[in-house]
Image 1 (cartoon, rainbow over the protein chains, first blue to last red):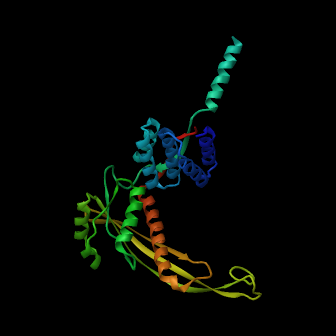
Image 2: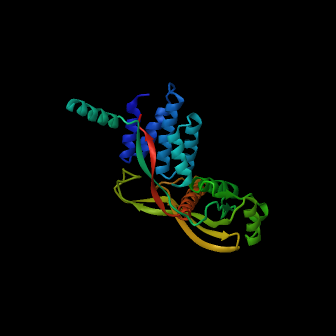
Image 3: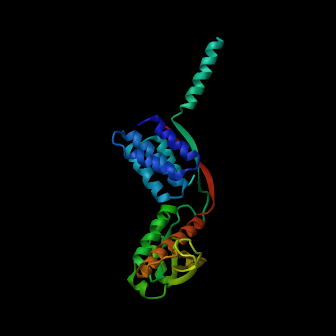
Length: 86
Length: 213
């Protein structure tokens, strides 16, 4: 996965283009050659977008999916803040 | 020495520019009507003309998303579907899912055909030169949401929501009832979502880590 891909998604997110950012990350997820760690990072970003849009059910499922792939402490921290309402 | 310092600063700036993650901010609930750990039992809704189980599933999934862990779907009671909701029934159903509160949704919907005069040479008829009469379908939904405290068995609050949805000017009358039903489900979801956000309380901004490579 190219570094530019995640940066591009982040750029879309910062511009408030949540639909486009979501589509971008979903497209990235369809790539086969990707480690679990990379996949988890994309899923984390997707979950943040879901949260931003108030789609909490999807956000929760996506965070959990990310955590099953990689127990990254930053993703876990995001999930903890999400569930704790912080 | 100066060069070394400059190189260090440049290295630091480059490292910042290539940071693999960024902080972003999202709006999250700050407080709600409930105390920590209190749960709300969602009683089967009674919307005239809408399938109770399907509506119940829809509302429960919205509730789990917006109030995760707080909103519990009460079991389906076939007797309750037949008669007026009693506080004793609420208490029994709420207790089964450990609900400190009970949420009751009732209402009805209706659909009707409407006529509208469209401008000439506009959608849907571009060939005409005179105004055309168009038909469309209008669905209206009205619901009442009641929140009961199951410790005191009192009605805490009652809120009403109404929604209307309409089709495009050309409408196929054969699908009218199906469209009404689908529109009623969509409107019900929208109204209930609105209530859940209200129930959840105010929001505040919270930071999240966003990966950038």
